[in-house]
Length: 419
Image 1 (cartoon, one colour):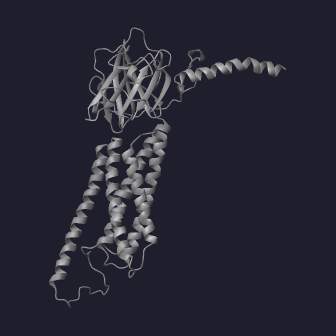
Image 2 (cartoon, rainbow, N blue to C red; image 1 turned 90 degrees about the horizontal axis):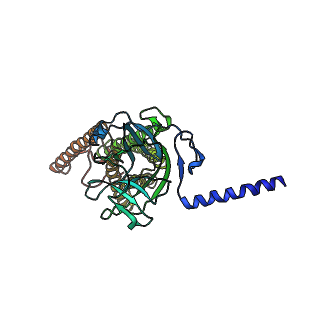
Image 3 (cartoon, one colour; image 1 turned 30 degrees about the vertical axis):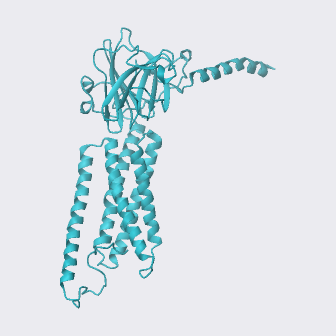
């Protein structure tokens, strides 16, 4: 009976919690230390993770580019919120993954969207960065009003900029009462704005952010450093596999057929090694996507497409018909052109990946050097092959062109090479 009375006492509390969850319709996360249950937010301790080291001088205008000592907290997925206080001025910088659409940060009294004011940033279809304050008067799109709101912005213009695959929203608030624990809304959409009208968000979250404490940017954290290292490994494996090893294997097959059968074994081994590197690249990319939730559809789609082409090339090795088969010519066309397509799209995707990641100049210079060496080698070998074909045409018909007796062309003809 005592247990039944205890359950009867707990039942009203359970019902109230369920009703609150329906009313808010938000995922609530509490950040900071000692957040009381009376706030209406779910209390949970935020692990002290770190933010990426970012040089604002590269892409943000003053005064935001000159901010050196900011407090930073990861807040949602790979969203990072930085702030610094100077008397009654609070400078806030929000960074988030970005491709298209908009990213917003709202300030609320109770954690609800209605009645809050938000700063929203986006890049329009002409490539111009835009940031505006919005007042969220209601749930309908027509009730989200641009250039209105209750945020105490000072006279310093707000700024928005992209750096790699991230967007940065920067603005300053001037308050007489210092910020403490403040309900904040984060949301994004991948749909473009139409005449400054916000499209419906793809996802959203409400958090209770503590502006009175935080982890300093640049401190060491295993999880953040692990993601950065994984992204580096993704790039390195992609450049080595698809940018270097596979092109070398293709060069061997096209220009060294007179080294029979050495060229075939070299070509097969090199391409299998390159395929393994490419497969690891895709697996690392999928892991990054699941952990960071970065939406880069072009890079991700092309990567999967190149992987499919590579798998088809591996299948071609095992399904290779005999030289005298009537299907050999079709197989040559298939194997040759699918290989060219794979190498072309792989090179394109490496460039897209560098652009999305905001790669430093040393990455771009290194890959440019590799591409340049490969292009020069192909041009030289192609010229030599052309001169060899001219020499063959100028000789008498009975002149022996193959003194080694191998029976293969020294350099490729105008047709695709036989594999």
